[in-house]
Image (cartoon, rainbow, N blue to C red):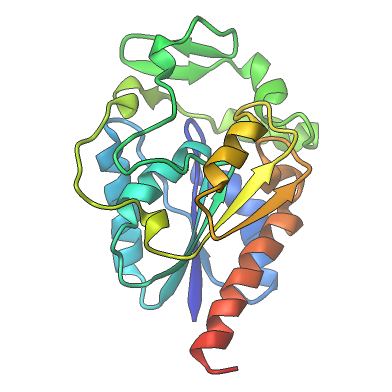
Length: 231
């Protein structure tokens, strides 16, 4: 059996995947969603990804959202049970590089409060930034689960491992109405993917279109399972 490993993005919690996980369960697909600490440097979160993969008794399709792409790119690199990666509006860049830009170096933005140690999302701006096509009640519940992000999470981590996306078949899911990560930047990163899917959604399709996201995941899980069993 192949397990979907769902890795959340910055500020978020593993619970943001609950709607997608319910759809996958209905499809008969097992899933796990590790909670990243986001309290230190990227390698700490990458270690949680790797520990999750190492704890499985089966193969994995790893799904990353937004900043979660960076711990997956580092932590999944070389994992023997990974069969496919899916980056959903995610950072598909060099291993050890947390983000395309260091938010500490950007001009102040009302949606974020970036202090010397931690960065937080201002709740009153979260809907417009992340969830503008989501049910307001669902968005409010996810906003309530947002957590602080350690500014050290933007520090470069020195590593010699290749990026995971260079080792496994990779799908990039572009979110065409994204206000958090520019869709054109997503398309540029997707140039290194094996295949590309575009969804007409905000930054958070796991909330606004969980069935569509589950379909992308389920298709890759089934493709691998069929190949494995010679179908």
